[in-house]
Amino acid sequence: MIEQLLKFFVVFLVVVEPISVIPIFIGLTEGDSDRERRRMARKGVLIAAAILVVFSLVGGPFLRVMSISIDSFRIFGGLLLFLIALEMVFARTSGTRTTSPEEEEGRKRADISVFPLAFPFIAGPGALATILLAFGPAAGNPLLYLGLLACVAVVMLLTLLILYLAAPIMRIMGVTGANVVNRLFGVVLGALAVQFIIDGLRGSLAHVL
Image 1 (spheres, rainbow, N blue to C red):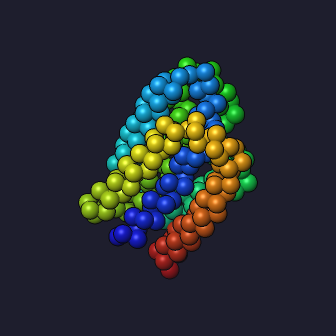
Image 2 (image 1 turned 135 degrees about the horizontal axis):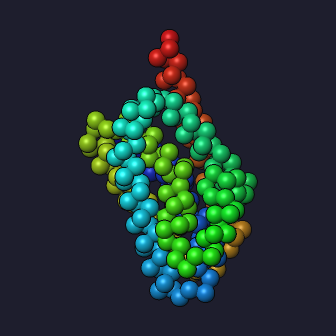
């Protein structure tokens, strides 16, 4: 179980990509005071955490109601995470997290904590897919479920800390430094995404055969 929790923690942290949010967060809050930035960071992380917890509770039952097997979702989730990994490796926006019109709308908002910070930057499609892939099989194991929730909480706290320190981190790393870190994480996420696809195919073929 420890290995499973560690794997989930790494995948979820990489998918949330708190480092990549820094340049966007700084750009969208340009002209705001540090106090106001921290208020929006707190609110955004809390709302994102609430979305993720709700999805962890209703995601599995929803799949069962729709007659979608967890193996089928592993294949789709793996493909989605692979697209995010490619986006990270090549340091470009592929639209898996947000679109240009959505980013433009975010720039016009005085308070970005709900949109686009909480959703889709923190609790985006990749994060929700990762939550469902991990929490779906853990439905009958309360201890594993609580461990996964603890991992989500730690990632959210790390995200909040990074947003709190966004300005000094940005001065030290710069855009190039952030891209280097994201590329390294993207390689790891790409390999894990392929493993998700392989596991989903293996499970689906086992049921067929």
